[in-house]
Length: 377
Image (cartoon, rainbow, N blue to C red; front, side, top):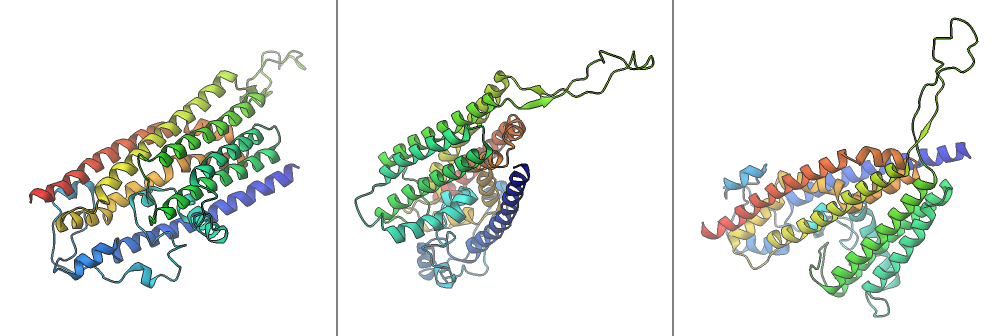
């Protein structure tokens, strides 16, 4: 059983390595797509109808203050949709939005095409029998079943629970896809303030609560080993060893209080990441994707989209948003390294998240000032 478990873990780590290579390759293609092709259709129309040339692409946050329109090569008017060999129904690189750029790799590059294929086969968005809210409510029950299996003492059951929760994530992507398709919205966007937005958020929270309860039950029923101690030998064998210590290791179990601390801290990190991540989706979406703007404002929006600073910040959020945190947690459960992962991120994860939030706040203020300043120029 141990050999079989080790082989499964090694296969999972190999798959993780291959997916990492794939995600990096897709990120490179995303960067090329943003810089070499119009981001939005109205950019092509704007460039075709005027002599406006490509704006200088700022390379850092501070450069927004001095960014200007420069003479140079015009932005290509060839649409990315016309050159890609993968249909834009399945290609996640076609529609560039603020949410798509800070969405985690698994949801953006794997689940998004998969839900499109599933919807094309089943035709959920073409009918009225199944609504997005029904899918959201259903995946709560999937999460409860997953949490129940993750609480099990059996590693095999816990791995099945991991697969179930990833299926819940797939359903979470599906409800968003169906909702956007019914409203004829292309690309990853959040309908902030709608009823479906709040229902989806509530269902997501309930699903994560079920997962964390399962994690807590498992850890309290199987208290992890935290260290060892050295005890003096009770029956010395020689006179020389009477004053010496025998190096006998005694593993110490973590206390329930330590388990509560680790699970609570990780839950707090997840909540903080979720609140701030959704906030940045809303404010960046509002500033960078507004269509009722002047040509100058529009060019400034595109300049931000193409900037290295914005791309780097979005990439970091891909690694620290709520979905990515859950994927890492599930990977640690699958590899039977849950306690080690929780200990690693307890403080380091919180500090890194606070740093990311601070940098993103400063970046957004620069972006807002850069775009709004174009109104008075």
